[in-house]
Image 1: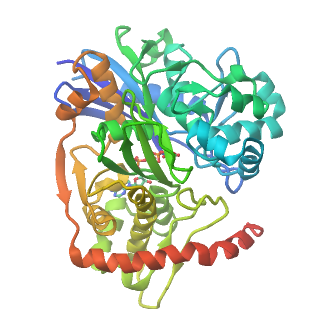
Image 2 (image 1 turned 45 degrees about the vertical axis):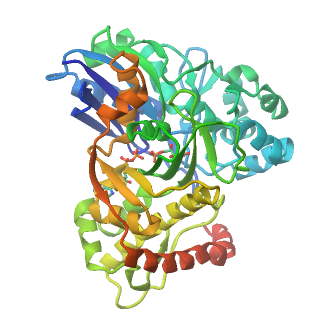
Image 3 (image 1 turned 120 degrees about the vertical axis):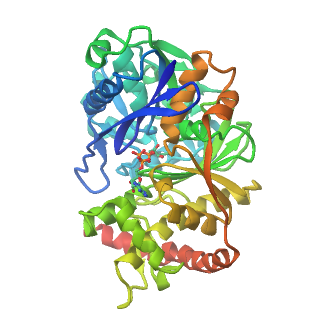
Length: 495
Ligand SMILES: Nc1ncnc2c1ncn2[C@@H]1O[C@H](COP(=O)(O)OP(=O)(O)O)[C@@H](O)[C@H]1O
Ligand SMILES: O=C(CO)[C@@H](O)[C@H](O)COP(=O)(O)O
């Protein structure tokens, strides 16, 4: 039987899945990744480690049951800046999407270009996480590095380049750089000139579904894969997550809880104006777009809690206790701003907190409060999208956060929507595999592929009583940001 591979360069790990013609995941390999936080707000990875770990994961799946791998494609964490020299080697560590060192550069961008013009060209506003402010930071703080730079790339485009030797960037990821004219799908010369960046740093653009060569000799040697495997460009992890969850028509919506958390809604056209209140990007599906709100530390808040307070417990063991605690965690409220926040509060200095700690609270209360706080934060993004007139009654939930049934019910109750869990929560890797399957001619379109590849496993309906209770707690949650903003900005000086 023929197979395709989906490679997801996540923030916490590289995941490779092997998918057969029926859409079943027959094998998977995961390789964890290191993140470096040299200073508060800094977040970097070593691009060489992405390559090494991907080769290891590909080698791991290269054996039995995967004869006839026809094609592979990529999904990757968005926005991370990778600068390469003319020989294609990375000039420094990658500066990641959750690195917030560029507040100053964001201010300078808006001052130079103007907010309306920025949103007019890129459909988005300047945010620390996006690639353009990172380029300007390197220009200011490491000019010798930028001088040596030949092109800038995004994480999965760099990985694909190293595995194939073809250097380019695909549109759904280019949309998150803040240098792409999103509606017209071309690099903005105007922005490069206004901000003093060499236009030639922008790499050639390709469609997500374009074939971008074959695996090079080093990759074949390291993995044992065949030279006949076709490579397709792939997409941003959220665009691929949307494809893998079948988010391919108006009204479709996604909740993804990985390291970050995302609420995403399909958009058929790129001519709307959301004023930068929400991200508005090119989809990896042809000629489509999507809107999205992002919680910087979603799964990351859960991981932080576990690593700090229960390092010997697995996620399932730790989460088992949340059933013992009623909705609302007996008055304990968590805000997940441990790395700052993106949507709706563009604020790199805000930090998280627990409010309402009482002597009666146990670790289970804290655990449930963390899960609820992450979900309230995502509701703020959902609310923005709904307020623009989108009716969202059903949401596909993916990512590590979709593994736990109790959390899925909490999502249904807080979002007041039906939550659907798919057979595999590996949305981004599955989306990449679907791009490879369509590229290989297995299906005429991604929509046709989704019919075979996406299978619902379980559905969680909102309970009226819990919905009403969570509405009240949500209103209190929304008061925490304005009430603690100044306090947190002050505390920043002591960090
Ligand atoms: N069993 C589980 N239940 C709920 N959340 C989980 C579980 N296992 C992992 N997670 C969360 O999922 C996150 C990782 O999700 P993943 O989709 O792999 O992320 P990424 O793509 O960012 O690498 C972790 O931060 C963790 O908080
Ligand atoms: O910055 C964003 C989206 O704008 C993040 O969603 C990254 O794309 C990382 O994703 P995960 O590793 O959390 O899946």
